[in-house]
Length: 252
Image (cartoon, rainbow, N blue to C red; front, side, top):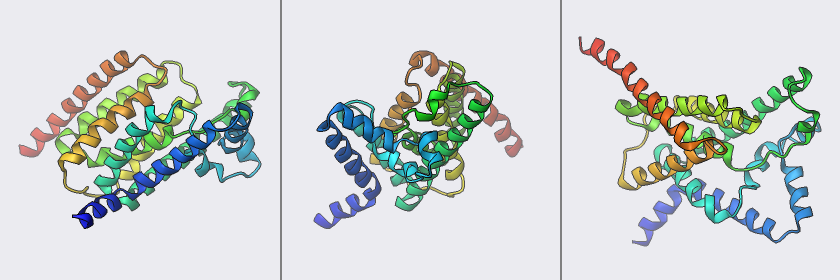
């Protein structure tokens, strides 16, 4: 009995380890004065100032410093999303997809901001903007679920998220919104190389549904959720529509 529980816990070691670290950092920050909190966020941010000074450790450290409000509001949803990825792909591939999405999105956004600064599209203050949190991790994990979705539903899943991402970007995004879409895309791309996922189970279905709902809230933060969801439905229908002609041609 105990060995079975230990095996289940071990199978989610990345999810539990990350949640414990993020929760501990969040608890510690609550004990700090506002000035110290601001200093921690400033030093952990993957902004142009820190990256320009060679502080590449922020590319990973920023994922453990959250400024998204009380931890009990978002940590359960994040854990469901990470657990869904870890149950689908295993711990190593979960780490690969999440790190690739988080670090890759941070670097791509930084490169985009450098170009935007040179062209005068953004204010110079963006160099010191705070950029920490779990959102890139969540988006990378959400993208990594794509290749694990059963083939018959994968086109609808992909269509939903592509349409939702387009709506978020089109609704007047800031660099964080762009980073979310980039992390989502990288998670999709990396997981496409993983091959077959593990068999589906009831717990995996539950955490996948809850995790996807949390991911949608992260992606559409600041956007109109019902409107974005409507476009997501259209994208899902379009994805299924594109799949049908292929199925007919194969059967024919």
